[in-house]
Image 1: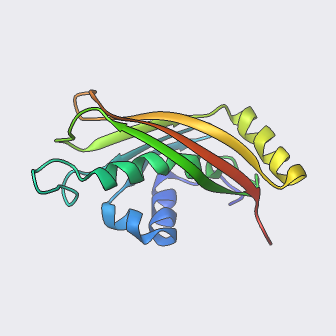
Image 2: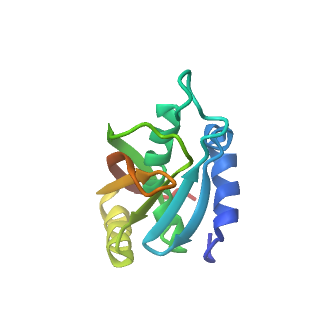
Length: 150
């Protein structure tokens, strides 16, 4: 992508690239260099006790490390998750949102290192919150950037 994609375009792209994310209804609410905010609805993702299925929250937690590089056109990297550690704090009884931040200059430096060395690793700490702003889950994701082919 050579221009800054809109959140709707990124949502559509992710749903096509990873159909399971589309089935969960995860939506990209905001995307700008160094920042993304996502939402997963409770509707369609509830479990046997009426709270959100843990797998839907885990998908929400995994996605930001793959999206942040998309917000900076022309990095020409592919993100890969290599580790995901989650802690569930409370049951989700509403939609859940998650915001992630990574300095755009750090992303550019990571991309440059990936092109020079074949890969570059970064860690992203996030938390999912409910509609009342209460923490539902914390996450530490480890990701690699690798040069895009072609």
